[in-house]
Image (cartoon, rainbow, N blue to C red; front, side, top):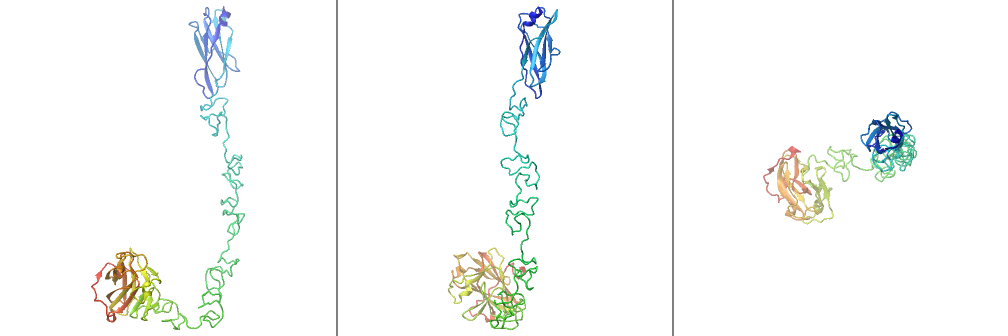
Length: 484
């Protein structure tokens, strides 16, 4: 009875649930297929893992019906095969183990982020090139410093240290690559010498005038940039006869011959400005070329007080007109504005074109261009201004309009040369002014465009030309000597 009953037992095994990373409970199911269980008081299920023996039963119970299904669990590593069998118990005792079956572990699924043998890795995808391949095998990721020369690396010495020939970014340490490595004193991106950094990337001395070392191409080098000590700032020797006037020389005509205006010691022969002797073409000579002492650097009388009448060629050089009147250049009287000259333009209405071919412009946005015109004494003075429109800056009336202030008061309003005479025509405007401090301050106050002026005459009112108009009451504005 016992043996026949046991032999009729069949076991059906299956897995329940998923697998954990290191172990999983396996479910063994026992199904009774014999016709009945007459005389059987209990059935037992035994489970074991591969390589071990059966121990205590994993389940024991009495079947309730033919074909009943019963189960038992065992915890094993997820790559281990589970074995199951069963016995029956009756009045004679427990039958022998029989009908052993095996439950192999499920096949691993690569890409499910669970490490399942025989996987080496599982990063949740089946892409390669990220350290874990499409078959869940570990991949090598190229890296600088791993002592393996990969594509894009010039070197790889297995470390991130510099100064050993291979940098931390796996590029070679080379002289001339414009990167300063530990063994280099410099690296200027080339391996040429003579530029301060040698072909081996050591610092070179760069020859320089003034460093007290005589280099090729230098005639001298006294360690300074001062002149007058025999060696110039460009390290050429100071020598009479070389065409360069050095301190101590009053001339240097490129030779040491005498009788040509400059003697063998490079001193001027005959009268020269600054020698204390007034020569031809000099208005004065006070023995120096300093300014501010009544005689300027060109040996012209400085106008601390003017010998009237005064004629100023604004923006141009000294000029003697057909009436043998000397027009002075304007630098002693102003440094404001922008001088301009065009000697190719013919001027109608005058035989003294050079006066109108030069001019000085102010700024359209101000401040006014100002002139300081010295006079001899307190009194009433006549001022005549000269203008001419040249060039393309103005093409019609209203594009350049300005006022003229004398000692802070508007004496001439709405100067518009295009409206008055047109282009390339000489134009004049006149006014009188009473002066108490020995200086007439003349200012050009812009309205539209840049104000400009070509010439100025100053006369005593008693000596003014016969066509002088009657004085016009001044219009006082908020600028003049007090705001300069």
